[in-house]
Length: 274
Image (tube, rainbow, N blue to C red; front, side):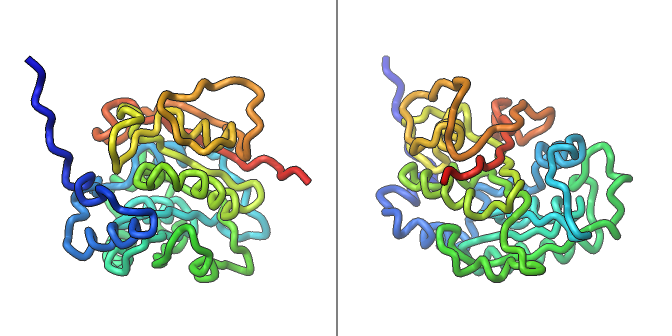
């Protein structure tokens, strides 16, 4: 006997039949109706923290005494913004919802005053509070440029590190090419894009959000395609897309929601062809 199809979850139902133009409104509505529990993880990313603490050689080198600058698009309550700030970055969280920004600011104010252990890995003693950078939250549409001026620091607009987790998977597949283009625009020279790839267990043809992403980052960034796949793309040497993958590994710690399949990929933009 065939199984009875299960109804879609609240998140998928909320975004069913929404156009690209109404995606931002959809997320704002969820914030305004206190439904952020649909995606909230309750703590910063253990995989991101372990990467920052254990692989400093991969990070860009700060110049002229300035701090490294980081961006977390779709930052939610700001967990990862605060964790990066406590590890010395000047960090900007971007959200489309004003309520999300207000919520993140409240969390950051409390957490930066007295941070708890989940902001660190095994080497917390190496990151005293006086080492922390600053945390800022900005309301804006990632695909527009009007919010970038609010993130300018010492005349520098680009970011040394951009972190993606549950952001690409929240976007309609047709938006992926523009996501990759914006990431390239926003990175400073020598900057890195750090992706906690999720969900990798989900069928690429299944409805989202979250949309399955197995093979999508490679197709988008390494190959330069549109990232719209029915089957994972094959990873081959000699890819000449807009980004080079400089690191790829399975994190020792990640969220349970990844079902043990999460991967971390780190990317640098290739020099543009003239």
